[in-house]
Length: 466
Image 1 (cartoon, one colour):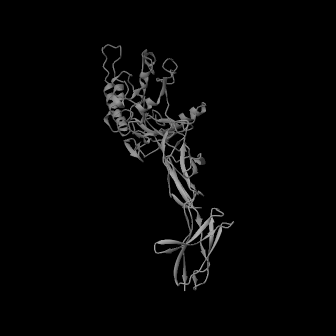
Image 2 (image 1 turned 90 degrees about the vertical axis):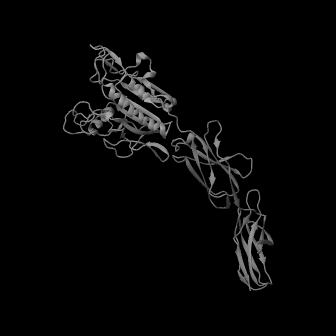
Image 3 (image 1 turned 30 degrees about the horizontal axis):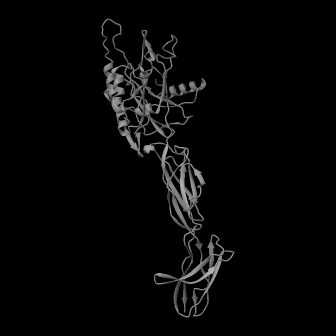
């Protein structure tokens, strides 16, 4: 009810009521709960006059459950099914289901909320259908008794089932919970409408209990099921446990005229099934960095948060059959994206491994990054006279002591070797050159490719001879 209960003075807010309830649970040794609800319009939702009864969510966050707040819905705002960032979502969370529909006249409007558990979305719809007030007694004067209240409940069930159909049409694997006081039996037409049929049929959890355990309420000595939890095909397939805890119905001293239902679900964590890997460049010069990036994918393109997974970058010499060695392990983003920045000193094969479904890790395709030796070139003088000697010097990295480099000169589109030199202990080289011909000459220094490195080329240098 609202903050001042049955006092009929226009108050509709229930924040104080909910805060008191949450505080009482904590004071009794229970966990801390948060709550979400939407205030109804005054005296429109039935119940005790002035009380402005409504349904609400109480949820705990200490075990990974999150509530997705979206939009700013009023009592008359209808939440709808949308696709946001590629995922099925509610336009308003919390939000009411078709609240202006005549099926909800003088009755509680269903409250829909979007929850997240370990990256999985769960849609929950809280309900309190039209009561049985006005129905003739089960064993009264008139037989069979007239149950006039069923007409509105059938309408309500039809509207709510339509909303569930919208969710399942957008995502047949959506996890949906329809819960609350349906005010009708598990064998009733109201329950049948909610269950539906075919591939999108909901599982009415009270029907999974033995017949003599299917009650949440006792009225005039008759045990009855008025409270229900119905779940979508995916939640039922995930696996569940369900029971009604009889703490009220069987006792004269009751806290409520209803028994609580408890359901637990085995929602699996997102399981990655594939990983990609790309390189920002596949040909580097020694000392350069390269970004290796990729994406960890979930089965069926699912909606899972993958930030709790891990991927490991592995390497081995390019083209070899050596064992892979680990370079770095990190967690991807929630959407599975990751990147590694490395500076290989030799040509290297890379792959990314992640925990697959077998004993061996699953891996990405191999990406090969070729590394060229870094060759520098310095000219002692780039403007000389005929027969004047020019000194070409520089370094080669990494160290390849005893190997040779070649000084090449460009003629048209071709390069011709002019001279060679052997690397010194400090990885330097010295080459002398002179000419009797005037002109402009372009040079470079080359170190031939080997098993670990691509061909290493220095920057080009121009020498002019006067």
